[in-house]
Image (cartoon, rainbow, N blue to C red; front, side, top):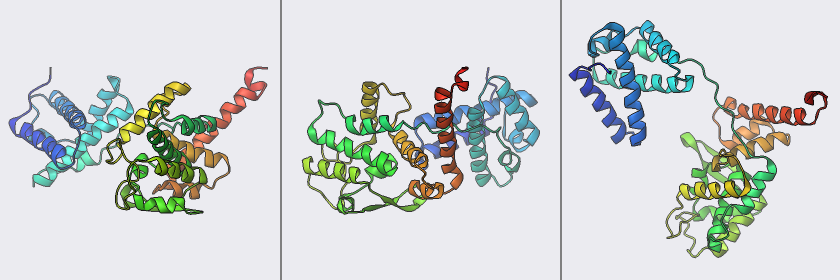
Length: 315
């Protein structure tokens, strides 16, 4: 049974969650997850020291309290990734409190470190599967212009390594760049980081085919890719198209629109691409983010080795 939280701390928690929902545009699911994470910590704090969880207890938190909470969570079977998320929520709440309470020192909480967890490796498609997706992305029952649109979008994801938000953020003005020989797109990615991305001929041809069939006029300031009614294309429709082609081709659940970006990077690396060049093409701020693809490439190499080498098969 969860122990009581003092009225002052309950009000503070409610205020923080309202702040998340209103100013940070957090989804209801995210707000609920953060509420559960912070409430779980406060519950532990009350049980650890006895009595209801209140502002005084929170002010008195020490590194040892946080270590004990994390140890108990791990003993209950909470994974390292989930624990890291819970600690992040507690830190965010403490940081918010320290900005509003002059006598609240969040140093002990903010300096706590979650247990290390290994990030899962990207799950790219193999080259044949990636090409098949670009050819068969749409259901045959869809209108011709919608099939051409979806083909153009996924060909850009795989051929240029774009994020889905970047592809759907292209405007009519970008169409002229795509159509020119040796074209490069100027993409504004995460954190406002700008990069130049070359457009392969297959992607340029796919976009041209879509524009030829599209029932909507090309507006330089409007979205390049449009939905059924002419508005900006919802990324969910591309995700749904990927779900359909995944079932038709028998691909794993990891075959998502973002997997095409992973495939772009992995296949470039397999073909001898320079890691720093791939970093620039993907728009990664840190080389370490791009280096995960070396692990993917090594894993694929070992899979091929085990499948083909007699000794690896026990022969």
